Amino acid sequence: MSTKQFIAEISSKKIEKATFTWQTPSNIALVKYWGKTNPQIPKNASISFTLNNCNTITKIEFTHKQNSNNVSELENKVDFDLFFEGKKKEEFKPKIAEFFKRVQLYCPYIFDYQMIIHSENSFPHSSGIASSASGLSAIAMCLMSLESKLNTSLTEEFINKKASFLARLGSGSASRSVEGPLVVWGNHPEIEGSSDLFGIKFPHKVHSVFQNYQDTILLVDKGEKQVSSTLGHNLMQNHPFAENRFAQANENLGKLSKILQNGNIKAFVNLVESEALTLHAMMLTSQPYFILMKPNTLEIINKIWEYRQENNSNVCFTLDAGANVHVLYPFSEKESVQQFIDKKLSKYCQKKQYIYDSVGLGAKSL
Image 1 (cartoon, rainbow, N blue to C red):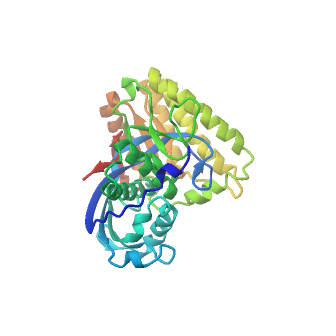
Image 2 (spheres, rainbow, N blue to C red):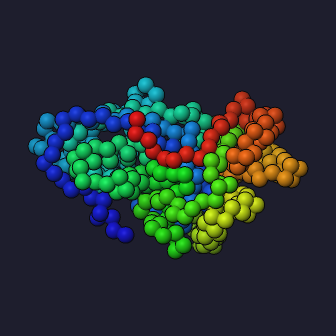
Image 3 (cartoon, rainbow, N blue to C red):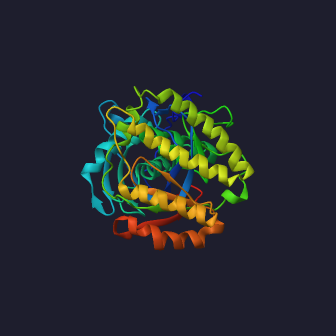
């Protein structure tokens, strides 16, 4: 699909002042995307649960610049200030400036406005939970709110699609944080409407067992990530197992699509855990190589396996590219699994910290 559809039509309409606030969630991939080409095109399709409680709230105040018509876009720079949790954060600005540079072709109106960005997370910034997905999707939704005022013919469907497209240019996984509860990003022959350019809602009816699914995030290591996402993805370029991995991920997404529809929760557990361990296996076998788990990550995994066998449970885990563990379980097991987490798993977390979350529906205008 062409990117031309996302180039905003320039109009003479001018809005002097506007403020938009969006709450957008983080997400956790079930089938992992690991490896990409420019500009942020995934090597394989992925699917994620949209989370509910782990989110970013971003408010952008737009003020039209009086002299914007007298300065060429090439000479002009996107003018913005950034406040994170009430404090001005100059160190965060380069990443956002790079994001604006990538989207300027599709949102040329950003040159016309001075922006004040206020952002805050519902989870601690240093918790080890990736905030780029929720943070960049929130900025993308604010941009689209302005664009929809400048062009009132835009549909909600197009706004969400373009917001996902824009967010992707800042962080690939951010494309999956606009909608929910299940979002596919990446072209896949068995997922109608799927695209490398933006995320789409999983198009099939999901079995009741996977609705209102629970995710408790165990904060094993709250430090800065050992390996940045950019470096991790780059390590796949010359990885000896890369092509097989990309094929495996797409095959697993086809399998998971059927599982989500037929409710085979045992198959879900097996596939999701295998995907998580495969992601870490890619880092273990890259050059240079990295061990992203911590000893307590392995302790938690073994305790989950023991609990599942002893209680005939459907609890399982997944991992991001780090040490923290996402404990996934159906709503029907919420009480028993949360007792297990509190009594047995919390001691493996830094300061016994964990976050109860569940599957959510995506971005909300506030």
